[in-house]
Amino acid sequence: MKNKGLFTGEWSSDTHTVRISLPLIFFLEDNANIVFCPALDISAAGLNEQDALQAFRESISEYLLYTTRKGTLAKDLAAYGWKVKKSRTRKMTPPDMSYLLQHNDEFNRVFNTCNYRKENHTLELPAIA
Image 1 (cartoon, rainbow, N blue to C red):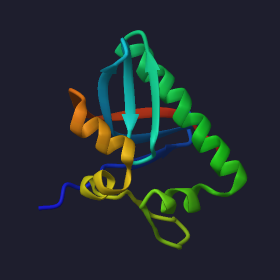
Image 2 (cartoon, helix red, strand yellow):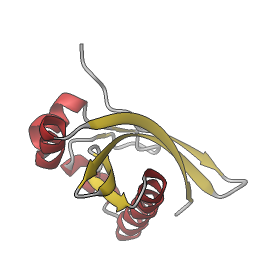
Image 3 (cartoon, rainbow, N blue to C red):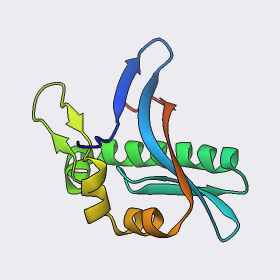
Image 4 (cartoon, rainbow, N blue to C red):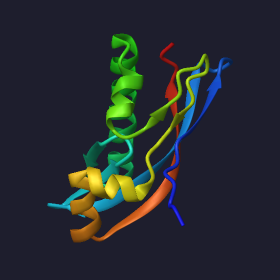
């Protein structure tokens, strides 16, 4: 049975936010709390989990802002193993976890050497359109 990755989104024009749900990996390394998203290869650190999660929100917001402005989001996601359909709505499907373990060295290292937990988190980010 495949362990599918999770990435869902919702646009809210009233509040000008984008809501996305991502699988996040939480672990402790060198006395820092780390939040890591293997589907996007983005991580952030903090003194505690809340600080790390806030730093992660800022990192993903900057990533989406940068790649959207450059027009490279779809190409970038495809490089991480995402399936990006060329349609008006551009449906994007993340790679499954087994793919990420084979192709993402950092995720493989964390998976095999760190005590971690996986949680699906819904983040609300400022809209960047």
